[in-house]
Image 1 (tube, rainbow, N blue to C red):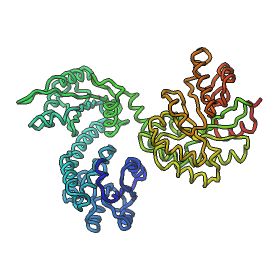
Image 2: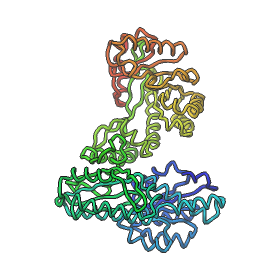
Image 3: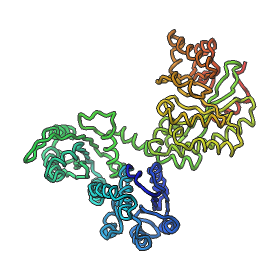
Image 4: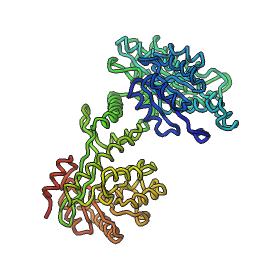
Amino acid sequence: MEQASAYQKEHTLLLVDDEPAVLRSLSRALNQCPYKVLVANSAKQAKELMASYDVQVLLSDYQMPDVDGGELLKQVKQEHPDTIAMILSGYADFSNAQEVINSGTAFRFLSKPWDNGELIRHIEQAFSEYDRLHDNFDTTQAATAYTQTLLEPNAILAASLKHVVTAELNALLKSQQDFYVIQIQIDNFSYLKSKCDIHLAELLQCQLTAYGHEGFCEECKCLYAGDGGFYLVGKKRGLKRKLESAISSLYARLDMPFHTVDETFNIYCKLAYLEVTEPEKHTPETIIQSLLSVQNDTSYPHDSALQVGSEHLEALQRQKTICDSIQPAIEQNGFELYFQPKISLRNRKIESAEILLRWNHQELGWIPPEEFIKLSELDKQIDAIWQWMSRASFAAIKRLFEMHPVLDRISINISAGQLTSGSLVDELRMLLEEHDLSAECIELEITETSVVDNIETCQQTILALKKLGFLLSIDDFGSGYSSLAYIAKLPIDVVKLDKILIDDISHSSANRALVGHILQMTYSLGIKTVVEGVEDSKQLAILEQMPCDSIQGFLFSPAVDFDTFNQLCFEQPFAE
């Protein structure tokens, strides 16, 4: 998104689709982009928004119940001739959409399912085209942007190539016969294309077709998908030999030098393949996605062909189910807050707790937080989860402090993304006002890594949060970074020692000495301490001999739901 800096006024994009899930996914994909995004779920709503906003780029679905996308684009062209319009739809709509593309009404045809990077690239090209036509940035920048647009692969051609691949996979799936799909990605395709004065894609396609007929079967087809990507497909019943043997031979052939009339080059490629034995469980999209996923997975070796196994397909399906379920879980309160007590070593009373997020999925059961949090960060849904969790947490804290004056504070985890977002301070200030809470009763737990990785940005945010009155703690202290250099420079109230530091404290004198020195140091600095992961009485006995304030761990209680924690606070079962 380098051209964003050249924009001279705020750009506005309008997304039109009658499926709410599609609009949500598109909005998530674009939430970090430097332009305003509007959404409409019908052609009527789209026209109303365009009457109220200055929309430079319109991205519309083709198949909609009230007016199809082609008709909408024609109307927009008449009423707002300056707007750059594009179609985002399924491959099946490509032939129907050709009229509006060929007439110039549509700037691009983008296909579903989309790649987020490609989607953003095409949207930025549309904004560049708008700016080029309206002199919205200086002539030199406009010429550069337009030249880059022309040098990009033709979007209509790319959609057409993908349509061919999808159509062939659809035909194989409908045959209800077992078949194979081999995805070949030429990593140095752009380099070879720049060096070879030939139609490289056609030449490679012919060569791969010959390999396919020779090593697999006469019905084997080679399909070009653009950008150096090829697919070999065929039914298993016609194979001349075992599939694995044929693929090994193919990989060896591709590893040999590539000859043209004038020069010889090496081809650097990756191969992934899938045996489809249950066609009813697949779609063209899931087949392509699974192959590309294996290709891009750095944990897999790339010195041989990679097979997409059932476990990989199941993992992909699980990830898709989780990502698709996050927004409904937010809307339907599917997430739950759990509370893990922190026990004071002074009197064994529950004086604090850490709020943790839990999710009991209706299909998948309990999903580990680290799994859905990581996926939400990759899928750009982490902010929405944070918004739900922060509001729910403040409401729960309000209730707990009304019922339990003995509580000293409740802690909430702050991620690195929130800490560097620029909006965290204002968001928390508004929540304090909304729930009539004092900041002194809330401890914000910040991971050690997030502070070290973003020390300059974090320092400003931490100082602002401290000024509001929040208590601040460093979580996972000692988990891998040298924290001693900065801990005295920041207004930290609490340090939480990571579980890894005390796992061997009962058996290792070195560990005991290390933990003892850390606790003594923080005590000398006037910083309170919490030790995480206390699981047995031997660990507890050792910590009681050190200047440790509180402990947290399964020895006393795991994380529990609100009602259970509420009852524990009333009963104080660990108090002496």
